[in-house]
Image (tube, rainbow, N blue to C red; front, side):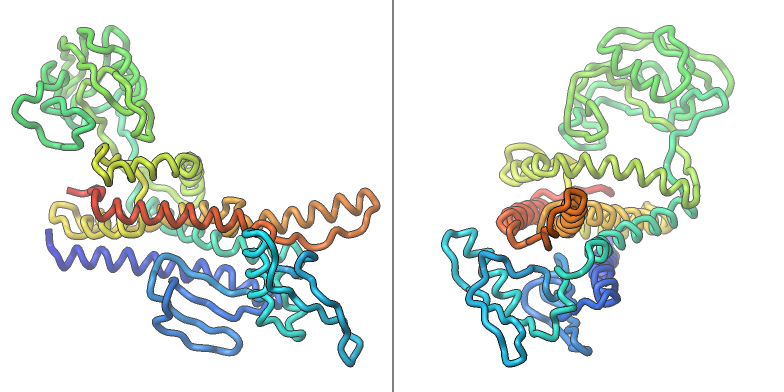
Length: 451
């Protein structure tokens, strides 16, 4: 493995993710300023400031920990009724409200402190520029702008790959019968996570039957085969029974008898749930399908389904990584990774010698696209501190107002997002813990995709 190429792969991936973060934050900042909002900070990263420069009313900069970014939009939190103190009037007769900085109860104090910190920098000149005073649809556009940029980046990268390189698909002849790409020499237990045979491994049923790459499977156990999905189902349901297989080799009909082996194999595409099924030891030949925007949209629809399932199972799968860290189980190769894990995968991809350059480029583009798609989708979750939480608050604000108008009641006013801060703190803590687990896992028990 070439060390310089490995570092190049890491640099490309990290640079692309940082650029994506920067564009994400621009997706918030640009519409916020366009709607008259006041943006005082635009930063990539967290922690100590590495560099910054103030242009106009906005400070632009980079911080030391490249795990995100933020823009500071003034007036995200309205003054809550429970925070209002003494009301007085200035010389011009304008009402002045003093914000109290203390309260009782842990969560009430947290909300009070956050609101006080928010309003310490707000001046009377900012009144008409406060985020919470924007129309609900403007709030939605501002908060959806960030994750939408990530989705757009993913779409552009997927489209680039599909249009120029293609998307792997199972290749079948005109008859629809599957063509074998490779035949396993032996049976390797899936939990051992190795790719080469060792002494003592039993010969695979496919090798024992005499199957070879390029053979077209025409029948399995007396059932005509018309697709790879059908053949896969027949193999898995056969268990360890003897079975006759028929195939074509260069147009010549052939057949053989073998016993499929019962193995623990993935029950579904998530790769985690295992059950005992029949195993033959063949893989289908694939080719690359090219397509444009419509094809990319359809494929991203499938990706969205998988992403939603991945997000639902994220705590469970991160727990699996935690158990792998302490040695209770091997790490699932399909488990989630952090930016550290993505960097290692990118480095391995670029540094291996046997992979063609165009394949390396496409793999990196797919990897970056996948990260962007997940970041965008994850940020749409309707919980604070994620962008989706602010979107949900804006939508709920309008729903309340419409309902009030229909019922002839007074305007209920702005939704107070500060009341949801306890949920935001819990959510942020969970996200931090999961991120740390994945980072440690990517250092201690990394996933190796290439090689």
